[in-house]
Image 1 (cartoon, rainbow, N blue to C red):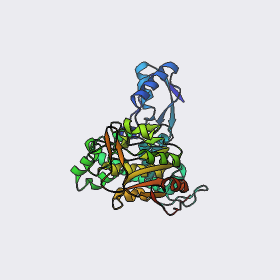
Image 2: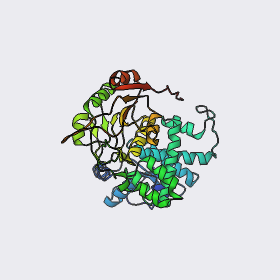
Image 3: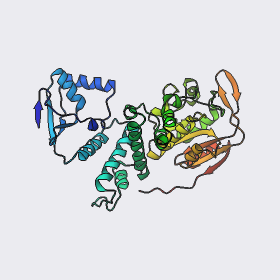
Image 4: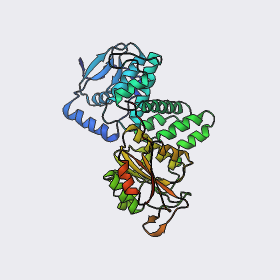
Length: 383
């Protein structure tokens, strides 16, 4: 290991650097303060054969600016593709990745690993005769289908970034990108309908409804979930950690530990723990919120959730929700929503309450007073 007092002439490969999520302003300021206080303790990693910096770009910039010495460690890699794979795997070891950052990097790891092995099965004493997706799923502790979705997400981000929407990759890394499901869908239509794809990804499309909770199909009115539904949900889950589509007035009743308002843009934030959701009922927001919840449930970020929606069984978003739900309640009569300064109102159609979790008996006990409860078949999961 060597030590440099000034810039040692390391090359910065922009293609490789783009694989590294940039720090936030606060993270960069904290890093600068730490380097000024303690010096540079962690070595910069350099690709020995090319003299290319692989890790430590921000540390090097700060150290060069203030004349701080930094240690350097060289590693040997046979090719540019191997350098990419090294960076991807190194970044996946970070603890502060957002769900979208982790998903994108896992997708890239899948692509690079599959390319290296030509999509063939790889045998080893620990992973005998496993395909790439199986091996990465086991490595990262997620389902195989999650890795496959990650690959589709990464491919969609890169395709959109390189064709119709430069900069979307940076937005995903910064946590400001559209929902994953929207990105994947936009990439599918980009080749034939590029203008439509751009519109799907625009901020105005993601916030076209002015209200986080909508009881009417038009999406023009803000009405909140009734307290009896909230209390039943809290009873089933033992509490509510997050309401991702809410506001201050609604949370007076929901009493979630955290909530996202329309201004917060819950679609751009990570979701976790016990979730209650009454999503916006106007398109495209209802599809986007439901797809995001389903993804978090499948990824294991949300172990239990209760969702109140219109009983629109013919829609794609309802079918997507029901595909992973454990049980559903169809209330007898229409749910009466409320507003802080208006009288209560019933929507134009019936509702459904979907449950995601392992305690279907508790859901049945809590929600059978509202109407009929049906259990989904137990789905087998592969180890």
